[in-house]
Picture (spheres, helix red, strand yellow):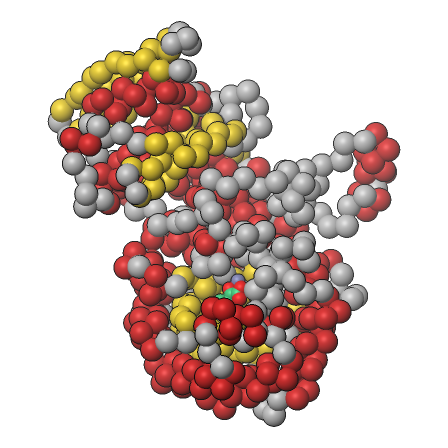
Length: 508
Ligand code: KIV
Ligand code: ZN
């Protein structure tokens, strides 16, 4: 019988550390619920000592996730560990994940510690964590550049102090499949009690080897893989969850391991992540990229018609692609909309459903078919309303050089209107918004893309706007791309006003 490999998802922690992937508490919760549906064994929700917002986000995920274990990260320091344990307090099945670096380069230049000090700190950290939380994972950061003899020592100490899981990460994406397999075999063979714990592999993708290294680590004895949806993460990212899972499923003859992932949720998970963060998935990304199952050349198409197996090693349906193309129309009705939203994993309250229905009818009026991705976008955008101080009531633009915009914003019962010029219609409209609100921001990132195919597609806009020292993300969606962009800018501005203590309208 195939052996079980646990999937430890770190999209909300290591993934969220990648530029442009930051998520607020509500967004993390939405993604966590999707990960739970996907069937990951562990959701690493964040690093609670980092900020109060991060603490609250981890706490919220811990409270609401039903099946997966929920993990929180802590350095090997008492304050970190106590904070992580407090954030995990509402979790049904918490995991405290503590780490310290073990490579000489980190010891000398970052920690300024001797090996003995690292061993002492690791032992104290694991013992404290184990006192507070039932399951403890210990990570030897930069393990793949550490001395194997020292890795054996630190693993021994962590197990004696009570660790349940030992993670040997390739922090800088430096190792190779043969090497990492050897490292796991060596440590497992030389540590007494290694059969009592689970060994875990956490890989970064700097050389494009993260998935191959994770699979080799499993062959060397690891039984937990740490990974992220779409492979997001520090620098070049982490092991891509969908790739490593489908490699095990498709090549079971080589990798005879089982995991609890529902592969039908792979594409929906990647799609939701991309809607929440605004990060685009490269077209050629395995499993979840737009072209991953597209056959362009005549020879390939001919082969596919004769027998799909000629050019397809797995079916698009098996990774949840067909589901994401289910369509709703204007006549689907409120019950149909509620039903489909629920199938996509959203339990909406009555008032939320009412607002969603209005937006859905509005969209279905403009485009005949509303796809699952359109629906996801509308639901993600519902969240924007919790920040909505200024609401875009009217937008008119004309000309291009310079362009002119007239904007009306509603705030409570009052409506404000102003006009402005700019280098293009979006610039002009943003200038008009700034004149009304009395705040000016600096646009740091602006992406626009179509949600679904077709000339009538919904346009999604993602912006990052700096207000003084702080940056805020905003998103907007509309069949009119200028309106989508302006809504995204206003969304970021609303967040700034709602979340910043330092907002003062005199800042123009
Ligand atoms: O890459 C790494 O080493 C990490 C650890 C904190 C597990 O993310
Ligand atoms: Zn990492």
